[in-house]
Length: 128
Image (spheres, one colour):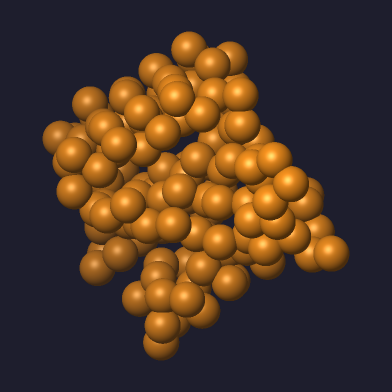
């Protein structure tokens, strides 16, 4: 199975797209994650929607808004959107503390690191 992060962006409208992806694909959701980190000395979060593979496909997509939401005011509304979809779908949000992507030379290395953490914690299936 191939697990791949699909980055939607960091803007305010991107969280709306992520929430809509979760709602329209509610039958495919595997997990909802909230990655906490500190970027440029500010606490930020990255909401993640992990979907199951589509049919006989071999790709498990992880949709993310990377480090674009401050963990404090005034972003409370954006976090509330993610929490609301969690309640609507009766799925808990799993929080994880991770390194910031700026600690890695490439974003792809950062995502590989996060995938490794998720596999080790049995939050996504192991490599096959």
